[in-house]
Every structure is written in C-alpha cells, then in structure tokens.
Length: 95
Ligand code: SF4
Image (cartoon, rainbow, N blue to C red; front, side):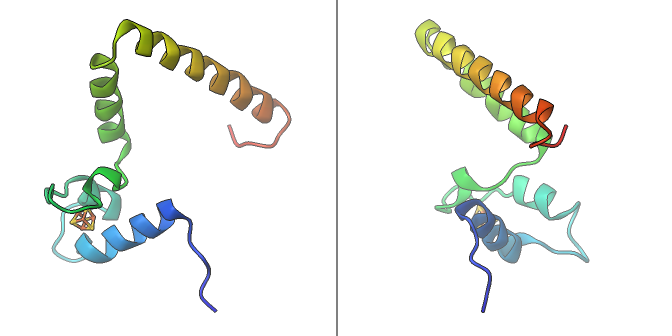
C-alpha cells in the first residue's frame, strides 16, 4: 500500500514529477521547481520554493501589508517564536 502524503508532500511530488530533470536540468529538484515559469499552472502559487525565493516572497508580502496587517503579522510571529522556543527547550523540535 502506498503511503498517504500530506498536501504539501503531494504538491512537491507532483511538481518534481512535472519539472525535475536530473540530467540536463539546472540545480536540484527544489531549485528547478522554484524556477518554474508556468504561471498558468494551478499549482504555481502553491509550489515549494527554495529558501532564497521564500524570503523574497515573504518580503514582498510584508511590503504590501497595511500597518494593521503588519502589526497582526508581527504579533503572530512572536507567538510562533515563543512556541518554537518552548518546543526546542523541551527537546520536541530540532534546533
Ligand atoms: S507549478 Fe510548475 S513545476 Fe509545479 S506542476 Fe505546475 S508547471 Fe509543474
């Protein structure tokens, strides 16, 4: 029986199957998926991105936020940071 994938894993597997060229392609699977240019693809906005592209996307979203949205975003980031630090301190999450 095939292991059931999460939504994120399924999208990554689909994109890899779609675009990854391990012989003639440039970079690893994640880089090739990040560099996908098929904006008309329904998965385009949901495709996994490499670390650099994620940071660019994050900064683009932050720049488009209203002051209220930015305040809400920063409060949520702080809540997440505190929770992650607690999990790390309890040894339940990798550093
Ligand atoms: S987003 Fe790009 S890599 Fe992913 S399925 Fe669509 S066309 Fe393929």
